[in-house]
Length: 253
Image (cartoon, rainbow, N blue to C red; front, side, top):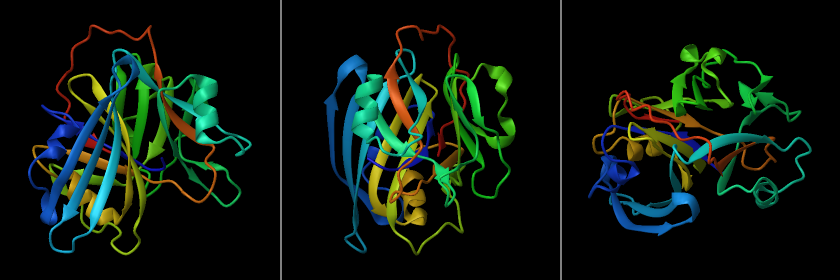
């Protein structure tokens, strides 16, 4: 699994993507769900573009933020595989992720176990932050991020893909690639997902369906290089919060 973007739904979860049709003639071909441990659900979705017959497959790990959380794990040597990292940390699901320069140095904010690894950076593309804190899993604009919020894990990401249920214009439409995405909802649910090769602009149109609200952002990594930062969905028996959602609309990363 190698890919990342972020979402926030108002009422339903990623099942909103499972409406009969999507933008730009995208339609759901199949939708299969499989329950896993600790309430994590694996969902496999296949979409087809009726105009071009192009197909895109997405695999999602959907979970409750009351019983699970996100962690950032560092693969500093770049030698461990995703499966090895997951077994060692007893994780339920995971994806590779991160922006890196040619020397394999992380670009943009990185926090793991509450410790700052790389500070927040101002850049045109990495305009969002995916984070975990005592309030659950959130997606914020970079300018909204604050370390005083008790953040335990965070990674900077972008660009945003959807705004007010509309796909963002000007996104890349010439280089298909595998993508990774994540999402949060107002109902204490979140997901991490990956999809097959697709244009970034097309992914934006696929995600901007149904009643998806407000903002979506894309987090891209270099799939041909080993990634030093690994998102892991790990069971957390201590994270059980009674605070109710404040109705923040869904965002995509």
